[in-house]
Length: 412
Image (cartoon, rainbow, N blue to C red; front, side):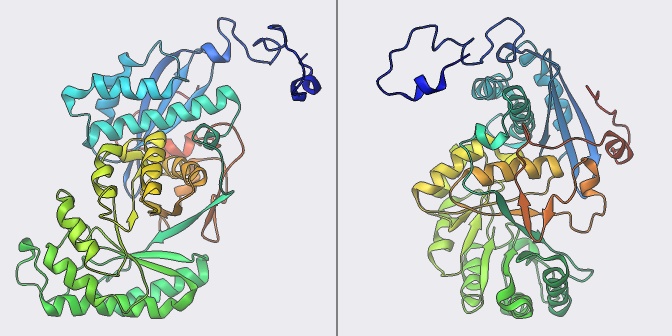
């Protein structure tokens, strides 16, 4: 056994035996945990409020990891396409395998879109595998903890999202009854004053209607909750500036994606034109895409979607780049418990985490997909100390909610 007192002594002399892998409790034997191999990759798509694509990575050590790829048709086929590039590889080599997949899938467009999202699902599953093999929670693999829980903001909806008073009532209900102190509403809703939505131009009556929604919801919750508003890339640069300017007198947590996502020069001009905080990032892939938002400080808050933009380590890299410009991270998230918990682990491990989105508060069985209970309490998500992501799949619930035509993956 290792002499821990000797290891703590700065004047002690060591032999190779003292510092050997065997003495330190690390297995180097063929078949040990450090020498596992991937044997299979399987997927199942769950019919949630979005189609959740769950990914399982199997190993010859008997350890299986679960990840999630951002929703959208075709990802399961892309993941199947990547299986030959993973079988036989060591699941602990997460960075190398990630770059290996990016290179191998370059012909399919691996700098963005569904390919990156598919790779993200595999990458999350690899973190779950690695954590289980090494007996550490996933947050340890991306830097350790700054916090024991992450703040969760709830994305809200009403039957009539264009009605300011309906929005105000739902805001008050969720804050008072469900315990959230951070919420978000859509702001790209019809006002009844549109002449031509295709040109992205906002007429003054349309802006007035959006101001009414903001005023009603922020006043309804007062200082009990922060309120953000999502525009879904809907407006011209000029209209976005006018809208943001009109909202400056209200307590807006952030205005999200006010202009289309392609032109970051326009995004920068919008952000610089207003004191209303601007958040962008769910539709920008990998650290390379986020760089052109962050370096020119074209955002006030960056909002990557972890199962979409590259996975856990890539999101950590995006957060590090954001931190160089003192920009906080509010992760976009429409995932099942798997992708949500992966995002929470990264949120715990980065200094500039602001909040994590939750999009399924109206779906009664969201938490049923895993064995663990009370994942979100009083607007907070506690970070598990169990190895990997710390979640256990409920296979019966997954089978009950699979997309028609899907096949359940192997349980072990």
